[in-house]
Amino acid sequence: MSNISRRKFIITSSLAAATSIIAHGCSSNNSQSATTDSAASSTAQLANNSTVSNAAKVETTKAKLGFIALTDAAPLIIAKEKGFFAKYGMTDVEVSKQKSWPVTRDNLKIGSSGGGIDGAHILTPMPYLMTINDKVPMYLLARLNVNGQAISVAEKFKDLKVGLQSKSLKDAVNKAKADKKSIKVAITFPGGTHDLWIRYWLAAGGINPDQDVVLEAVPPPQMVANMKVGTVDTFCVGEPWNAQLVSQKLGYTALVTGELWNDHPEKAFAMRKDWVDKNPNAAQALLMAIMEAQQWCEKPENKEEMCKICADRKYFNVAVADILERSKGNIDYGDGRKEENFAYRMKFWADNASYPYKSHDTWFLTEEIRWGYLPKDTKIKEMVDQVNREDLWKQAAKALGVSAAEIPTSSSRGVETFFDGVKFDPEKPEEYLKSLQLKKV
Image (cartoon, rainbow, N blue to C red; front, side, top):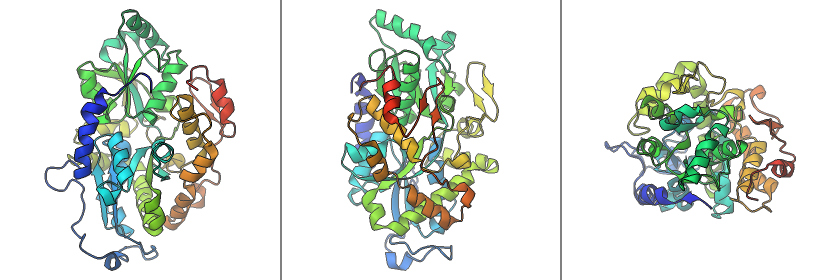
């Protein structure tokens, strides 16, 4: 990939990969994965250990799931901490902190049998990139959230008043180029959601992300530290890192990503195909637990407890205040702008946030083609049908007792409209791609 710096991957990710594969989590009190010590018990003995009378017998009670320290990982963490996994018979689920998205990918590639993981809180495009590029077949089982990310800018650019329009940053980009310097833009993973959001935003303002700036991959928890020392000028990441940047007065939020695309899909729950195919009942039990956790996380009265749990050292290791307000939809941009109960807040369940619309995955694959991460001849529909298992989501939803009104009847949410007026018709991805001025393809 052109202009993607590997420096931070070398420094922050390669070492992390080695340690993460050996030992998951980061707690110092041996409870990093909040896992039980019942590994010696046989699967047969535990298979019926569900507190739900009509729950299917699971093939295994064990699963290793990864997460990154981001607020949208809350459904996995809450499913563990509130006992939802155990409720559906999955009594030995390990929820393990990953150092970066490359570590998540690598641990999924080797699977739990090799010391890795079976599934994860993951950037929505990653299961597709793994299936196509890494030849590790994946299933996308649920969306974990919509909205809830942001693009933030260093304090030194405050006078530019960078906001929804990236055009205000263009003069700084041009000046840096004239001085033979560069504006450094941090993303979390090449081809991931944050990469695609900031690419779309830059391109909409006439800034070519592959020629006019330098894109650098940085693990989410290290974004603020990199901004502090001046190694990045702007970044796109999930919470709580944008809020933390503002609280430390190191920069400000230009926009939250719901402003780019209202109720845009974000993280997903994905698992290795071979694990799901071998353990269909266990996969459904995991889905039911995570979906119940999403419902729990959505309730306003649970926000504070959710944030307190996630802020713990073994999960995010941050102050509760860094998570709480934006989880409630209260956005302090850090430049004088403030929003209360913002419409673009993160949603876990409301407005079909959990449903994995195939139309959304179609957009992601189209954007991967746009920026050269996938070849132009990628068979989009075929890949979406292979990876996206909305059928399993519906099956789990019915077993969970989700009302028919909350189960979408279509694989498509229809035509989507972005902040710049551009429309995406999932039935005509080629037309959308042709209409875009800046692209690699």
